[in-house]
Image 1 (tube, rainbow, N blue to C red):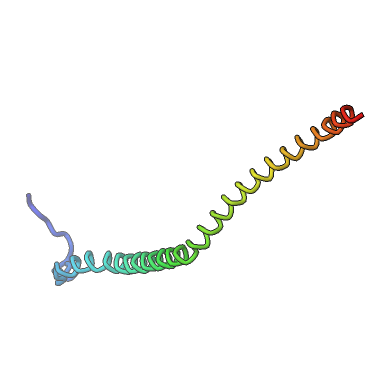
Image 2: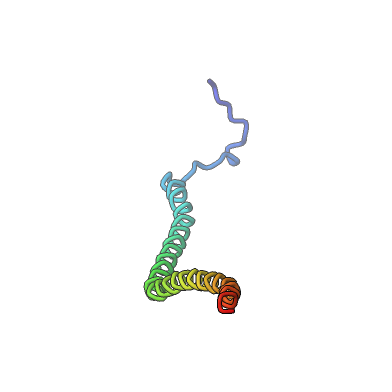
Length: 110
């Protein structure tokens, strides 16, 4: 194909002096400028989460004996409540039988 230049010689564009390394360097550096701070913030956030996890585990270990004691007290409370209910039932049964026993005793003694 024939190429025809219709521009005068003084208006002709000068050949480009830019090295092809510059666009490649920009293509590498610009993403790195965004990726590195993002990764650093993620690493910092991960460190914070790991620290919080360690603190929570420490608190759990510290409170575990207290939790076990509360659970034991709750079990004892349930047992005592059951015993109380049984005692009340026995007292009610005894109270309902006593008038009959008094009547029976009164009837035989006279």
